[in-house]
Image (cartoon, rainbow, N blue to C red):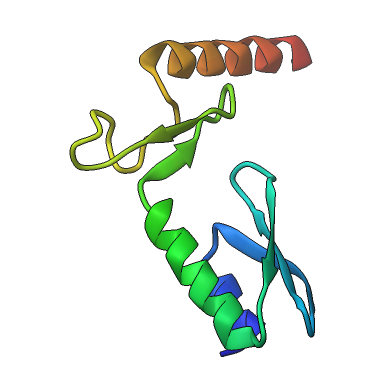
Length: 103
C-alpha cells in the first residue's frame, strides 16, 4: 500500500519520515509525533490501523485542544468539535468578537 492510500484513508495520521528502520507518524489532531520501528511499510500501515482503532472516537477540542471521546456511549455527538458546551460557546463568542473587530 502506498503513502497516498494512507493519506486518503487515515486522515488523522501523517507519515512524515520513513526509512529502513521505521517511520515518524504525526497526529494531525494534536500535533504529537510517534516514532515507529518497523521492518517494512506494511508494518507501518499495521501500526496506523491500530492507532486508528484506538483513537476512533477521540477528538481534539477546537477551543482548548484537549482530547475527548465522541460518539455512541460517550455523551457527545459523533461529529462533536468541542469537549463541552462551555467551550463551544466560548469558541463561537471569540470568533464573533474577532469578526466584529475586523469590520
